[in-house]
Amino acid sequence: MNFQYRNPEIEKMPRPELEKLQLQKLKTEIGYALRTPFYKERLSKTGIKSPDDIKTLNDLNKIPFTAKNDLRDGFPYGFLSIPKEEVVRLHASSGTTGIPTTIYFNKDDIKNWAFFMARCIYATGCNKNDVFQNMITYGLFTGGLGFHQGGEEVGMLVIPAGAGNTGRQFKMMQDYGTTVLHATPSFLLHLETKMKEAGISRESLSITRAFAGAEPYSEDTRKRIEALLKVDVYNSYGLSEMNGPGVAFECQCKDGLHIWEDGYIAEIVNPDTLEPVKDGEIGELVLTILCREATPILRYRTRDLTAFYTEPCACGRTHRRLRRITGRSDDMLIINGVNVFPSQIEEVIMGMKEVGNNYLIVVEKEGALDRMTVKTEVSADIFMDDSRPLNALKEKIKETLQTSISISPKVELHESGSLPISEGKAVRVQDMRPKDV
Ligand code: ADP
Ligand code: ZN
Image (cartoon, rainbow, N blue to C red):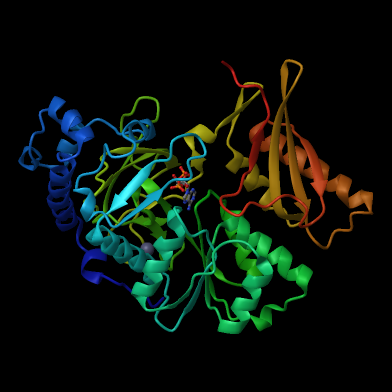
């Protein structure tokens, strides 16, 4: 394969040198952090009073973790390290569960973000000849502007399409000869359903690649999108606390996401003991940003579950790879005492070709018991009025879930394109059980 590197000297830097670079950047970042009210107080308790108190990367372990609640408590300016007049932009996470976490940027921070984002895009083989349709929400959400800037930095023609409205999306793809897409995996699947419905031929489109991220999805879902849309799909990972997209991305090998270690220090810890897991084991990703002045965040507990690859990547990059993120530790459902992640259910159903492009998991209380219903669309070529294949499919889903995760849910089959689709991140679980107080 012909690999291309945007910053070859950094992307292929020998690890000892890379770690030296991290140390130097960490010291600078600690300097920024000491200017914020939050870390000034936190770090003084650990004896870190100046960047020079950090001598090796191991000194990071002296710093307590930062949690989402800390960011909320610090709202609005507790994590700001520069005078307000130097701030040029803010972004905020969706804030579905309370106060939004707000991240501020100065001019250099924005440039750095575009630098990492461009590296991600370039690593997938894109270049300035590409036409890039960014089909994700713009605004406070980081996916829109993050990819937009990165695409421009690579020199691609960027179409700020925004999310939703599949009809308009197809029209733009045809009018401007779009070659690269960015969307959530659920929207890419929805796009394919709509494409069939609208009778749009794949031949009328020039798409070759798609970036899919912002929500968990399985390898089977990637394969399904690749087969249906006939594109190469690259996994994109990021979170607003760490700028947004641009944190980790797949290269052309499509086997794990390179985390850019000159921009972030990644640790993986056991979410219960908070001790580092053994190399290769699954745990919670903890990130320290090394490329932002206005809002330094140290040892942030992402809640995202992943593991490091232990083998180097065939592309020659020395930056470590993360496994596909299977979900957040707080996504876990407990169904009558059995622990289950929505991603495990997705893995089962998306591997079946009779299953369509969208699904929803509903959990309710039935007396004292939990009752789970898996609602899934069926593939467009199954007739809804012939009950035999439908019943067979229901049984197959039930049995496979029973053997793989010991859950025996009710299965409901729905017509292709009929389950609700969200414009932002897909809502995969509706937990209707009364909350404990
Ligand atoms: P929030 O969802 O907390 O409002 P963000 O919009 O910043 O904030 O979303 C970041 C989160 O989205 C990540 O922490 C992770 O849980 C999820 N996410 C982003 N990209 C991926 C991906 N490629 N695979 C799985 N999960 C992802
Ligand atoms: Zn690689």
